[in-house]
Length: 431
Image: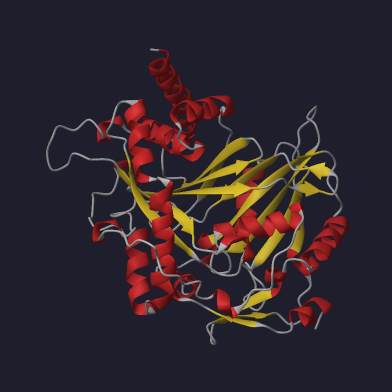
């Protein structure tokens, strides 16, 4: 047993019902566990460290991030410290040829299966892809099984590894983190979709099972100015611009005459963390989904923003967190499974849009300049989106099945609608 394992003292953490759902492959919905791997990439300028240097750095930092030493014990339905855990074994190197597609290779790293008897995470150093005349750069890719960590857990883990600070040892009292809500929502507002809708045509399938990742940046000045003028958050501005982009991406879906097939917005889910602040050991899944309708049926950018703000106000988000912190740990697995399965069903939820916020990251003295999330591709969900708020920028990433046509165009439309919304609100203010 390594010194790291002895320091954690063999602690065991029981799984909650949401953990059990993910560990069971979404209650048996997943046939290929690698599709549920989750993580992100960070990009740095300059010459890459050697594999040995990166392994030494991670080994030193991992002592302050105990979650990295835990493995899943399926029989005991618990997490336990892995005997013989060595952080360096989880750090790998991938040297590419000049001009290679680094995001495509990051997806290959994400798809490499984990050993079931070891902690379910990996950090890959990817380099050598820069073309002639380009400044030298490299990429780090963190990958984990969603059963092992959710997106918010990964964010805190990466911040501890490369941003300073530390995480506490995961402890059984974190499961559950149940509290009594101050205000119960109405039965029609339980964050679980209640009404089935037709599957959105651009995401209907059939699918190839092959994935592609798009990463880009927004016009940060336009987002900040829109938020300042309207009082909306930057995330609400991005969601409203996405509604406009989706309307332009498939206009025939939103111009049907009044009737039974007329859509009143696109049902999407916004994952919300249920963790109790920064004190969590960041093991397993403590997450739920806030169900909203993106107002793609509204042609006005300002009306799209107004409806997004109405559905995603801070009071409503906090109410949902409190409700699910109270309910989920108390519900039996037999009740949690169908609730979450419905949330992931494309007849109730067209896509998931996750927002993560990260503090400054560094490798030694070198600041990390770009960060993008890589979501899983849930069963029957051919498009997943992550909005990463890092430093002064917002960096979206789209992971999609290659059968979904026109995602490159969707990225362009989304960027354009950030400026369309900015122009609309500043014109109204000028009047």
